[in-house]
Length: 357
Image (tube, rainbow, N blue to C red):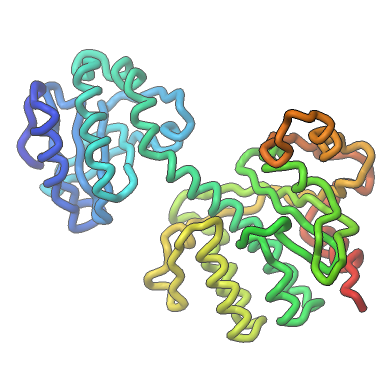
């Protein structure tokens, strides 16, 4: 372990120390540096260059979701073979994080972490959460990608579509009105990590049929596919985005498959990295997940009560395209809605579509 830093160290001193934190040579070879007296606060930089914050050895209670998901009480190893029991939070990589991380250390000291770790942590938690705003957006994008690729995978394996059709049915990776377009049938895919079909709707057009599908044709039917995604701990067996993409490789021509991979890497404006050899792929693409539920809702059903364009446009002073809202759809409406399970969903989509034939 490295030398301790005094409790009364200035921001500048701490900032310099944080920026100079040595990167670990392996997963269990971190160079831990304690801050202040009492061994209640420490930091290190892991083998990927990410800063690790260590607080106390007693369990901490978190009230902020983005922090609670990352708070991990465990026993950690240091470079000298020693161990420390502490609550760890791993921060995103990047030099821009160093200044915020330093401010967090200063605030924890100011709030009296040496005396009452829980009180100091609670008072600083909102500041800690600022580090994960962009990370949460990235997780949400990955969750949506996992759901959309899960449907695409099944459309490919059904062998009901030519390579050319597969290359055009998935449009969720681009700035389009629909995630999937199957002839005059549209599918809006919504993913959630919750146990219920609660989703954010960016505008009424996402839940109302009638958008153009090209060649002066318009959508005649619209489904909302609600997919529950459960992210699993690293190392646990499950599906991965990388695995889904690789699974489709043998089913499609190289040209179409490579186009899908490129679209996946650019999903939601991100810039993911995919390596066909599996050596340098984005770690997020290897994160295991499982699908908890699949429910497809026919949005034309008269018992589905959602905000529609007419509801928005009747208010003269409301900008229609600016209205977004959340919905919660029930598990059961009637015997035909929603359609549950991949097999039934795939059957409904392939049976209901018209490909202009």
